[in-house]
Length: 110
Image 1: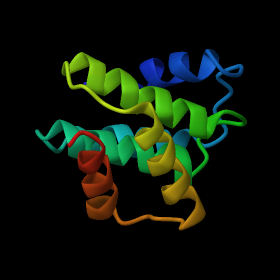
Image 2: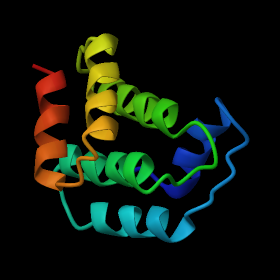
Image 3: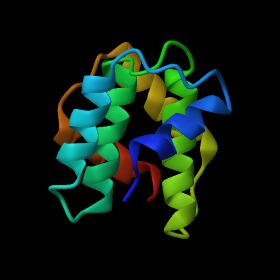
């Protein structure tokens, strides 16, 4: 399970790790714990980072790095360009539907 501190540490690679929406981060962590499916857990976190703008800066880069890290943790091969496209799609279309975000993440690993 990924913790808030793990996500903050990822953001620190790109910025200062300055959380501006802690309640959203806490909610995403709490919600993700209710699922045993790691893709659903990841979808909660990605949605919070991208849509709720948890950090002052580096939200897109943090979400990209988080997805990559989780896929590497599960030893799943992936195309980084597809992850970039996924992030852009979620942001531009303001996708908030968790089921859709989960499916988009799953499509990256196929």
